[in-house]
Image 1 (cartoon, rainbow, N blue to C red):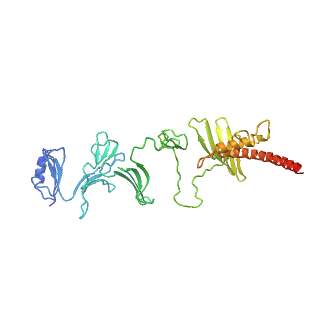
Image 2: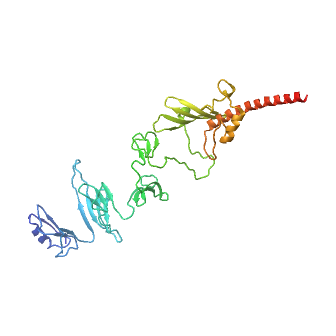
Length: 387
């Protein structure tokens, strides 16, 4: 039996009493305001005397829905309908509480049965807590093992699916390429890395330990006891592998410079199209050390010690010690006068050594010429005495 009763009374208790006289298919229509002094149970499975406990309103049947039907028709008013869901209605469906955009027919929010305690919290400051009721930041994720944020491109917009994870645990912070074998292309290990260990400033300059103001496109600085180093290692034995490449349309822009911390002096290697130039420089000017090109090595540096190179041939400029003096010095000190000591497995200045060797070679030819004259004199004397 279907019946429609229009009640003008404002006493909702009378309405409920009247509605109970009809079958389960009856629809009661009440106009005007009303109230219930007590709790309300709505649904096909409501008993005659529900045990409400602290419930004010209870929905009780096998399909639980609460629909918000906005009947606005004017274009300037929002008309969208919403529905609160409790569980799927189909056999084998899921158990959840959800909010559905009823107009669009899609769920925008769901909480599934079995979710952990404090799965979602918004505190009085508006901070979001996942797994905590006391979020300490705007978003605070708390879990017993490796809290993780997943960024998942699912392919629904036509782009290749790709998944990234941003996570952290007792080993460090990392970004994981979950699509490509769960590799970790970026990691920060625990242990107290200093502030600004890696920084990119507003100009795109990258600083490694260089504070907040790197002075170049890549600025590496270190202040502890260890040396500041850069290692480029190729672990795959590939022929002709390029490890450092300098590209510029100008020869002057392909340089490697070493400078003291005060900036007063520097040395540099200039890599030109057809040569390598080694130079020492100051702020006011440059001093060329060597040029390496297809013709060989050209050096420029300190003069011979002792005495300037090629000046051994000028008695007014340089006095060549006697053969006897030179020999005595050589045997006593275990090195040549002009070359200086050269210890085993010790580095030495190639320019200075080359200049010293040249100096000794020039003196050796002077000694050879002197000995030649001595031999001629002795041969002459022997010829006279023997004649």
